[in-house]
Image (spheres, rainbow, N blue to C red):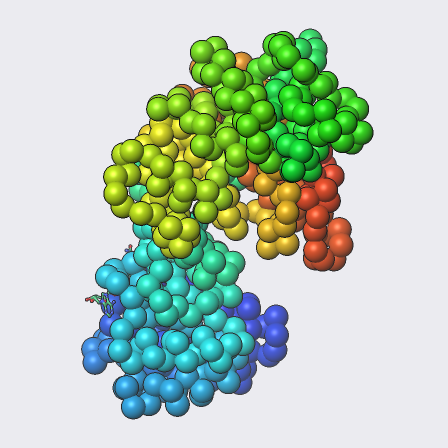
Length: 499
Ligand SMILES: NC(=O)C1=CN([C@@H]2O[C@H](COP(=O)(O)OP(=O)(O)OC[C@H]3O[C@@H](n4cnc5c(N)ncnc54)[C@H](O)[C@@H]3O)[C@@H](O)[C@H]2O)[C@@H](O)CC1
Ligand SMILES: [K+]
């Protein structure tokens, strides 16, 4: 507990010092009855000793006794929270330089109740200056990222030991702000529990990104077949093909109506327009912007032959309605929340239960796993945090982008990037001595890892493109243009640091 409190106090002091002098700054810690409240009180005691004006709002009749004694001995002031003073205390706290949320931690069942809920709901409306969550924002489920409202949005979450799954999945991650991990000596132990929710680091991604060998030629190193776009949604074809070209495909073969193909070739003269037999490909991308019977038929045919030949396939948007009864793990579905709800509703195994877009947004981790389990495919659920579930239930979570990426065509770019990586990796991903094996990834989970790599490259490209405009807005084309640089720098960074 002392290490946790020390790490928390250190982070709070550093954040306050970015804004003003520490001595005389005001901090209120919101204290619940368990050890989370204890961490908060010990941290506040340390901050009081560094000259901060400290108040503890005690939300339970009994709080961690030893921590309260340390807090009082350091000169802190305690106020008891009651239904009658919740709103008044919210107004007082909102004026403080920083609030520490130590109401509920990993031992919580359900969310904030009674006066605590009222205090937090009022505070959230008053938009406090700076909120630091102790271990996790109170009201989050540490294992799932599901949220019991109200929750006080944190600017920074200081979490102890390992990063909890609930801080890597929405809606929880969206409440946590920047997450910082404080080691408390249990990390070795954590390494041995194989985590079911993983986040790939830049160096993992550098290791997994496909790189052409010296003897590579365009046919051997990643030919992607694309059935995308339609007369109505020609842009999806243009974007997905161009993104696939930029992300390193050896060649892209496009199948679609002439009007769309003309636009595709105008933007990507490197692509080939295939009118009947597409020739050899290593992977398929089916569905972005696909509409109309003729183009759906092309997607269906390509899907059937891919299934027969054992080729990997990305199934996006319009093709999500064309799934076989059982998909293999090297079929990667890329729905957003609404499409996932529709997909789940269409599966016989879901039964009569209706799943809505809101359901998926409230429990993305649950539903992405369910979809992977029920279809047999790898499922990539797009969002601010993108989750990718392998049919085994192992999930990857990547959150590298910016909110500006929620823009038309962004998903088509992701599909193209994933297509390029899939076509390049298809023939080596199962190597026993390759990078996937070195990261301890079982065969059936490797497709999910590759999809997570694509999600991260896409997110990083968006972040880089926006940074080039001082954090300004993005188009899908701007995201796409940044992809080669992101791949280049991830590769270079990996080369510099690899063992
Ligand atoms: N596990 C560990 O190894 C460590 C845990 N630490 C801290 O300990 C915390 C976990 O401590 P606890 O297990 O005491 O859990 P909490 O601090 O979350 O408190 C749970 C307590 O609150 C009550 N409670 C549960 N749900 C509630 C609700 N909805 N409303 C009101 N009361 C509720 C329970 O009866 C229980 O007494 C962590 O989040 C972290 O802050 C750290 O000190 C570092 C080490
Ligand atoms: K907390």
